[in-house]
Length: 195
Figure (tube, rainbow, N blue to C red):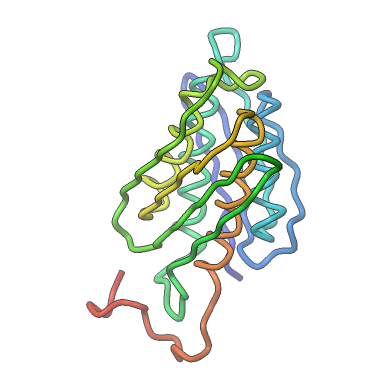
C-alpha cells in the first residue's frame, strides 16, 4: 500500500493527514479555511487520491500558518507514500481549463525540491486565502514532496477559476507522475539508479 499518515503539531497548527496514492478520490478535508479545503478537494478528486486532512490552526491571527503547514504536511505525505520510487513513472503534466481560465502544471518527483510558479491575480484574496499564498502552497508542497514543480496560469479573468484550474492540474499531474509503470520492472526511474 502506497499510503502515509502524518501528524504534525506546532505552537501554530495541529494537523493530521492521511494519503492513499492508489485511491479513488475519496476525501474528508477540514482546515478551517474554506477555499483551501476546496482547492485540496480538487487535488484529491482529479488525482484520484484518497485524502483526509484535519487541521486546526491559529486562524484568530490569520490563515497563513494553517495554509502553509497543511501544504508542508501534504508534501511530506507524498514523499513518504512514494517510498524509494521504484517502478514510478516519475514525471507528469496537465493542462486544465476552468471556464475562461487555463492552467498548466508539470511535476517531476525527482527528489530535488524546486518550484517555478507564474500566475497573475486580480484581487487580494479568494475567500479566506490571500492570493499571495496560492503560489506559496505549491512552493511548500514541492519542498517537502522533494519535487520539481512548475505551475502556470496562462490566462483568466476570475481568480477563483484560475486557482481551481491550477489545483485540478496539480491533481492530474501528480496522478500521472505517481503511477507505476510495469515496463520498469521495479527499477528506479533515474540514470543514477536512485532518487
